[in-house]
Length: 171
Length: 306
Image 1 (cartoon, chains in turn brown, yellow):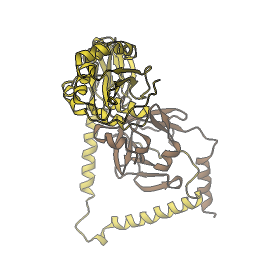
Image 2 (cartoon, each protein chain N blue to C red; image 1 turned 45 degrees about the vertical axis):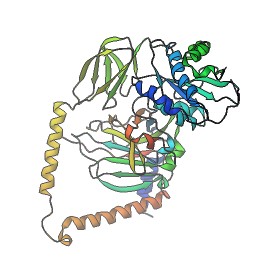
Image 3 (tube, each protein chain N blue to C red; image 1 turned 60 degrees about the vertical axis):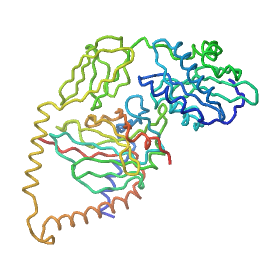
């Protein structure tokens, strides 16, 4: 137990309610009005969020997939040094809310990295997966780093023509 | 709202409309979708296919009408307004004129019901208009056109207004890029379509680390889509090339020698690392009680680079 104590304290410090609010990624399924085709929530089985450091900065330390939140999500760092968060169906169903004729999810993120770090803004990409296939993706965009607590970054996810039917499939 | 019961529908005359539909290839915001009833005669179908688009088009100033028979079957299978609205939107329309045609019962008249609905929501843009046409008059397009003229007039206010401004969609390969039109900031990509006066405009798209994009576009009332492919700036491209070269050198330098697998140092390092990792995961899971609780996702610090 004595060895677990520091770890326990660290976790409490990270998960406590007294810290700054998280940064929110507002991920919006496009209804086809901006680009591509409409996407229904039932068609999306997983949401993948990828953060890629700037080419001039270092990479994240690769790590194996790790299930979190009771298996509702998985986090890993790819061999290419990209941080990948995968949100599963149960998390999506619990957190999705209507947005126009489609849906959106708010994903709270944070980092312990301070503002004095000499790193450039990483690139953020989001994809919707169905049967393991990326049926819809966002354009890459910069994510302000460190992500400002309490602020929102909007990410629109588009369904290309080749996946039009999959994006409307609710089987 | 008209609630008169209609006879079962089918796509009996869909093929008769298809020739008209094929001829209409220009972008068309208003879609005419015939929903024929089962047992409708070919004569009536022909007359309807000629008279209705002609009559509607004459009330659509500067706005195209497209006969969308490909939507007949999907719309017949639509249970509710959002479904049909979605189908219309997917077909590129901003509104739809839906015509339900019921064949005569015995020597009775042919029932026609017109409804104008919005794309996306499928909501009616006004009261449905219903008319009964004598069966013998419905086989001639000229006669039918005359009979339906008051109906078209009644529908005209429900049809979308003609566009007075041009739409410009700036579709970039990068989100968060700044868009300027004629020097005025219009926001960051992705942007909804911009409403602009018809004529020539200068579009500038800029993003840090990318070459600026500059293009002069001629906008007509039909609207224009401008695809913007931002190219990495020379400095960024150089950095990427340097990184690729460094990665390649690392790969070559660290390539495993031609030795048996069990003698490779990295194999045992990986095994050791795996054990440590699994142990760490197990401890964290045990302490956190299965990982529930924290509703936010931590991203590790980014190592500082060059």
